[in-house]
Length: 137
Image (tube, rainbow, N blue to C red; front, side):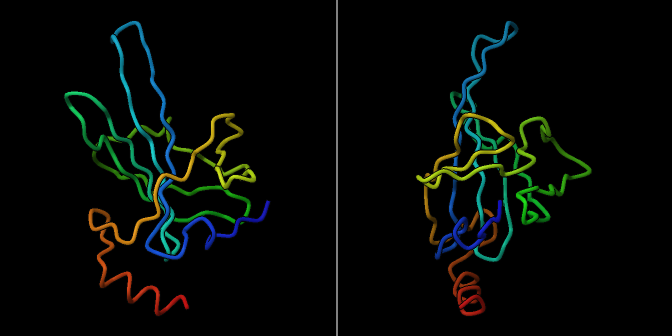
């Protein structure tokens, strides 16, 4: 499968795709997370896991070094800090007719949730994006 990165990233700052799931374990009553992956205009990729509830917020975020033309992701895992490598997708395996992404042969899609004009929390200010658009057009 050939991946068109410009389609994944969109024409603004980035596109955010997300997958919701609720994990139930015997030790916890309920844990709910939101996982999202962002494809940026300059080719960078960021995975974020957020939690819901009283302690809502970002659990961790990891940048990818890149993605091969076959969809294999190369995560730049930090040497310090918390991250859960078990939830990181390893390869984009399918894009359906709706534009939904499927990672690791999973049957649950990652749906486009937003096309962002900027993403200051990840270092993409409106000024930086203006410069990127000039370079990519």
